[in-house]
Length: 537
Image 1 (cartoon, one colour):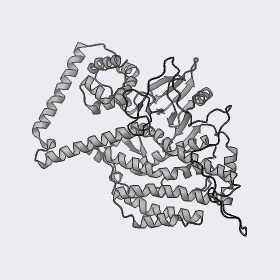
Image 2 (tube, rainbow, N blue to C red):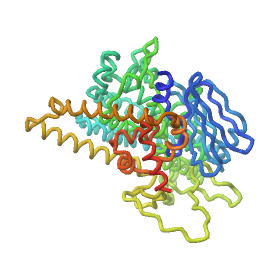
Image 3 (cartoon, rainbow, N blue to C red):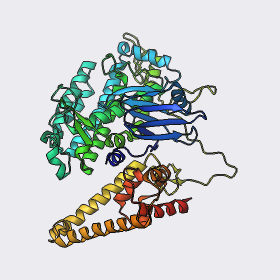
Image 4 (cartoon, one colour):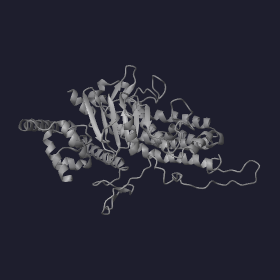
């Protein structure tokens, strides 16, 4: 039973979407004799391990969740050599550490950051950041059906804000209108788990915790999910700013405080609406269990595995959102030095001078200062390099959404659009199922209340159990689940759910759990999966 629970909570270690999540106690990261990275974690005697090669591992983020374990110096150098970042997130959702160097050509940018409060650049940046944040909040309010008149008045007053304090007041007033609209948002738990959770977990009355009066130390699952996603966003913001040469601790809108990356929090502001939209989608589509959350003795709500692992896989999504924002901030600071401290695009004549205002030269927000050929390419901006082969490579398929090349076969979307494509496909399937169920219910044929359907379902489940027992009697001494997790499960990611379902005869939902490593299929299906892998090769 203990081994089964560990398998359900902690699927096999694997790199998914460039992210490897390591959890548990006794975490160990070390380099073997032949230059391979050995990753180990687990709880007690139940351990997981994974060995990664430098080339071809596809690792971009190694996320450590917890405090117990060790990382060797060789492992840090190994990650730096392949351009991967190490991110440590505490169990309370706080970002604890990163391993990425400062970007190149960063000294001029940091000088401009220090001068921003003296030349008016801080005000223009603050207005731009909060404008993006309010735009994202307005989309959420429109989605929740809230009244937008007062909120639009605050957005309009932002353009005339003449000080950082005024910008902060507008942001606070907007938050006072924004978060009460979330009071009608509910989180769904399974019916059998409702008696095991506090009643206050089903809704979110306030953004602030009842214990601290601040967003930290969340006491509801919705706020705990939001805090954890914001921690992931903060880690990516810090990495993106360091890659551009900015100092993440020297903020513009957020005041400088000890142990806080103020500029990283500034860069997060326009992206917070995207995080809330993702959270709202998650609450609408997912039914949670009591095992997804835990309550500490002081009442703080914590997210448990494997939900923490699933949310950590959103790091590539926030990375793509933050990369243009970090580049925009770096370019703004760089242009302020070129213009001798005057904010970009607002070069006004000095008081009493007859010279007219001259706009700053138009430059792309994503345009950075060219690097010398001898300088290595900064982290998080490296381009994908096609493998060197003798014959010219075949022309890749274009993505159905953005038109970019699709590098993986059997894919219609690129890696950046794949999460959105899967989500849209899932939403269409859910909507179609709801419409079909509503039509059947309106016609008086609700399958959920049909004794015949329930009897047929019970017979199918009993027949499946009989087949499993019959197979176990006929195939004694077959390979164990550890072999399947090590040899078969990581290779299923190259196949679609339809292909796996066609080979095994199981449902798409079951095949999704098998492919993600959350569940191991019965051994009688292993032969069909092995045949699928051989056909794919």
